[in-house]
Image 1 (cartoon, rainbow, N blue to C red):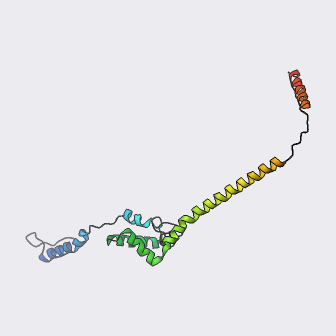
Image 2 (image 1 turned 135 degrees about the horizontal axis):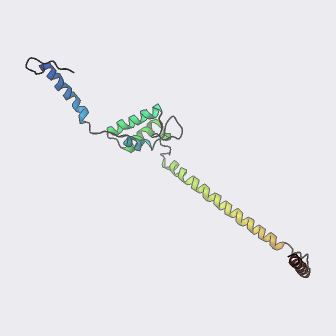
Image 3 (image 1 turned 180 degrees about the horizontal axis):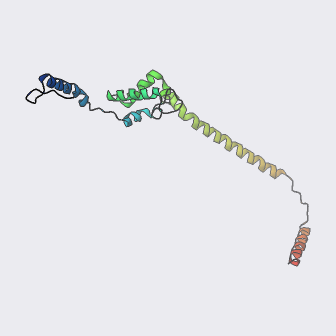
Length: 170
């Protein structure tokens, strides 16, 4: 902006007043010391899930809804809210599916305990079945009669003739 100067090389008084007014009005913008970085927003967003896409963390999603949620997280962080307060406010408005894990302690315990119990019961049944099968096979082998079909003397004669034939061919 070109200032029109009077004859002495000084700006006109109203131009000086406008410059001072603009400076005073811009002070609140300069005084903001709470600049929220993308990393701070993503630290909160990574604990939440996209409401539109299925099983995609909020920090990775690029839908319009997720971008709006990230901006809302940024404004809440600028207001001084903690991470837990922000997540609780989203849960209150949109439900438990925002965080992916139930917030109810009983349901949370069931989501942790149920798979562990399933594995333990499956292993127990597998071991029980294996030991029962091996005991059954052991009993079956013990009860079978042993049949001797050949005499050991004929077996030795056969071996002796085979070795003689092999030596003769060399």
